[in-house]
Image: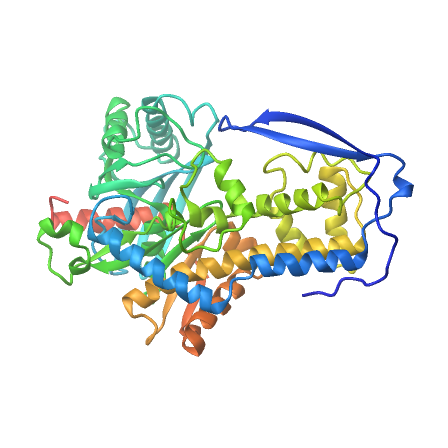
Length: 507
């Protein structure tokens, strides 16, 4: 913990503070109330004692630090949850993907990939060249907020029209060309019973299109492809994490687990059919491999028995449009880390320990503090912490002292480190379940937290050592390959060959 100054200044008076309040609606429709405080005659009210900021930091350090024994308890509970999800269909969502085994690395040919993301629709032509090599041609189409809420048929029609345009304009194929195999990356929880079909359990990432939840996404998209005479055949419906697993293994065969650490979070790994009782009626050989989409953002939801939730996590949960759900995701994902930081600032503002005499209304709006700000504050190389000065002054209109900026940076580290250590618990649960520790394995990781947040990857790997001891060093992480594009194409290639060979052709 960085030392924060110990000069003493007079105690603060809060007798002349004024409050105001208001409310606004979030994009999800949630009504959020905020409060503001201003102070008369700023020069009469100096900043808090520097020692006070150090005291606050010790308090938050105790709240946000996840110890090694606590991590091991979470790992054990995580592993039990995975077992329950594989045993039967129900409230624990662990999804068999019908991706049978690893790629050979020899997959070749041209395959289309469509990725319906939270912000963009991405369309790709992936040319697989074997030996872990590939080329990608792609186009992105921006999704409007209206498109994310309109009737589901219109959304899939838009996807089909964009794909049709890409095939005709970028690839020069006319309406009489052969149909290319298509992998559709749909990264929302779907219960699958075969590779090209999946029933949407619930929308996430701000989508709310009616007529999709409880319906077969593969069938809906296939109808739109037919409507617009798109020269593509839907071959595989996948989650981006599953695609990341396959794409990373295609390039590095030592990859056994894939994770997404970005706006949301998830993981995928390869399981044996004998350990998936809920698909027992398929009659697969016990040693047959199948990729599993963990949907681990939902770990410890509803009952909240295992994760060390703070009051800030509870506020985020109770003000969300999915109360009780996605408990793990709300503690570790990029969408929420900035909000945890902001809630702590608001607590200090309400206590009269921060920004006295300044108008803080911009800070008191939900999700006003982006997680990227935490990243910038942590990576600031200047003695004066100029990055923090810029963030607070430019975006929120408040002035800061050096002691406050030191506190902000250390608080950001605590929040980012907690995210990494909890994330490591999910990886460790899969490692333990599959017995990967002895030989070690590689974990493909994608998402902005992993790739852009300073120190996240190192903290993740250090947490694995804290959980497993020195043997944890055998579990390494690396930047993942493009799961929503390359992975989707590889899975399409694997599926075409499997069905041509008559292997589990009905799935």
